[in-house]
Image (cartoon, rainbow, N blue to C red; front, side, top):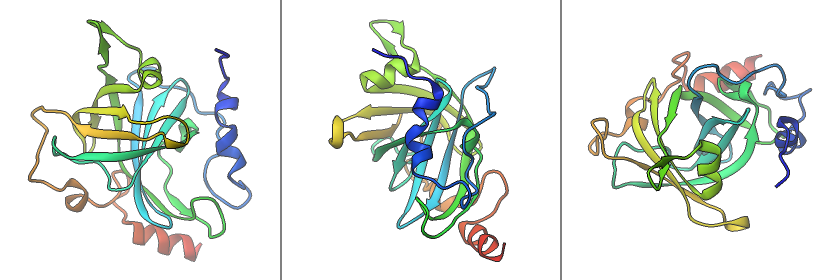
Length: 203
């Protein structure tokens, strides 16, 4: 297998965007965390409202669009559709993507923090990049809103590649609580999507 550079991994991301129009980062200058790898979940109102899970892996943010967002209920399976790798400095991006641009709409950082890879196979630890390549990863989130274990499992390949995100059983599982409704605003600034939209239009 040919090892791709970070720039190769971000080619699809850059081709979709006109950085003279969008305030999204082009992907230069950010470096990997020295400590635990980071993650974020961005709330994005484009054509439809959805949430984007981003995990720091191998110098980029591996990304999945989650139409219904994460759940604290262990019995609830959330569809996660893989998207292109994003640059590390996208992890805390908030703003309004202009009309006519890819993903046009408002974005806030709904949750952010670090994660710990807990994937194991045959009693041995599996690196997160390898786990995702195999199609199953488990990790513990330590975020401002989400805590505890989650599992991400691939259910198809190629054009039909889909993943399922599920909350694992632990002390942070809360089947009776809708965290999306209870904590709807930015974990960084406290702003709502509507406020970001208004600020973007006024700029």
